[in-house]
Length: 99
Length: 443
Image 1 (spheres, rainbow over the protein chains, first blue to last red):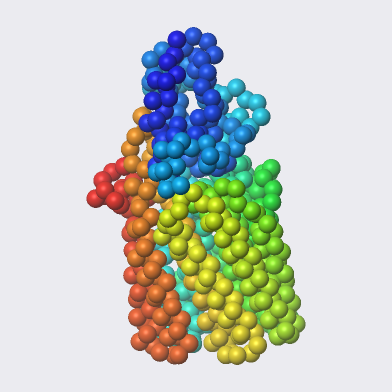
Image 2: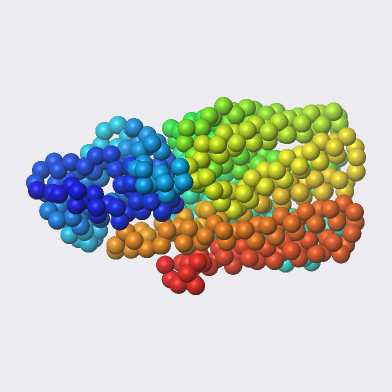
């Protein structure tokens, strides 16, 4: 059984390199599901379609999620629907950006 | 299990698919844009030296001699187009979500391009006709290869809209500018063309600066500005208007050049100003919706460049009324090229280069988290003095040239050259994998 809160904490180590805020607080992680025992599915997005850091961020999310206990397999889908909007950010992220 | 999976210690599988799933980017191997950009930096340094050497001559109005022609092409082909090719190869894949149509060709072309333009510029400086023919042919081929690769790549994209119109039109105009250059080269030996030297030269300059560089900067700004200011939810209503106004401007100016009717030149310059106003309104909408409230120095540089472009068009409008003869045309075109095109490219370089280098370094790391952010690699504030120095130097050079004040022109040129050296040192430092803000430590 995967502790999704633990995965979420690991993902907080992954920063958007341009903004300097982690992917969780930015609201880039749309969904995390344990499909089977140890099989984690993550659906995420980017702040802009065609983000140059697309592959790097996706790889970092894969890597960070794989460090959580109980994770045997990670699947990461990057989707554009629904598109990311600033209101998906946490209050903390918004305050970091001065919003 | 591949190497990355082995590093993870778990199995990582591709996504499940479905609408929009893993609709990723298809960035080329990072050595490709970096090679072109490295060539561009060498071009900037050589141009800085040539600018200082030529400054007093420019102030005297002598820019059409061999040394002046060589210096102009050192800027356009050696510095700008070299750097722009690298940036475009990267940005196209990001903006249009397609892989390059011929990445291997783009990779080989850097050698052909570099050797050809080096030979061409030296041949121009000493006016060596066999060299002009040989290296000119090589440069023509290399530029055409680049334009065709770019046009094929964009053609395959499913992304539509004004940005695509701008980028496609820019490369069509680039091919037309090269064709005009070929006709210019043939003019001394072909009697009929010999009568049209001046219109051909004006057409070549218009298509290269107004058609290619201007449309390219305007088009990619529609992607770069929102991306780097984190703008969301802005209106796009001005983009198409800017494109149509730019087209109208180019065709009116072409008609004016070939008919000799000043009124068409004036209308063309006015349409060009209208295009810049539409673009400015679009930029205003983007900036109003930006998340990053503090405007970084590279973005300020790009905005200053747009203002310089508008000023240059205003000068063209006045000049089209017959104000200052050849010296006026030269000053307006030089201000457009250096103030609008060069300052835009230099400004965006401060955002593009560290992003590229960061991505390249990160993709090679076993642990893809932690480490410096892009802004730690090259802080946007590092752009402040080089971009300011370039802008101040250019203003001084322009005013001094207009007043034929040689000392002022030389001072302005020296300031610009020092600023360009600063830009090159900072960008080269980062391209070598070092962090500008961390005492040069390896990233």
